[in-house]
Image (tube, rainbow, N blue to C red):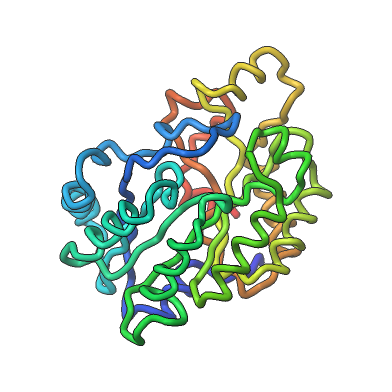
Length: 284
């Protein structure tokens, strides 16, 4: 039986009960766009308007899921440290002031962490913050640990940039998670094992795995439709085997937040499994 640390195990160290993440879209954009990316594929329908209005709608949407530990505002869409620091702080504080919000999860890129924002994060949430500071998890989109792959997908930074960002956040006393995509062009089982070993060397608390999905409206979709040998979309069974082998190489204290991407079916060209994330986890 495959054993791993779950995200529930991780949150149990900080909250008295289950917490619920409420995705919000701050409309911050990105410095560049990867060949696989279409933000519309994972943006909730309610994620429009002010942060407060999105949280209000998100809390209604998630009301059936008990969250005795409170809710986390999840800055999910685009790069959520990309913009003027004063504006970013205003958005974060608006979320923290909303009733029932006990902390933040901020997803971003490793090349979008300006020093003055890092200073503020350290004072508000990190090693220089009061003991009763709100919760913060920074999620860094690493996606691959191979520079050749990062260049192919037009990521705009190399792996050393990710290493530096994770270590700097950790040095400042801030919890760090990562995102990684399995199945990017040119990568295979040996590369996946390499990713697991390289990530295990970093001070990461959590990790989100994603299978490569080919989404309509992306450069990758055009490339794939022209040459289907560019990537091999996993079957569900192949991906389950890939994840099992990956986890065996991963440092066991890193909590696995999720295993799969989930996009609207009408936006997915391949692979199309018809499985919800919870169903894949059961399968795994």
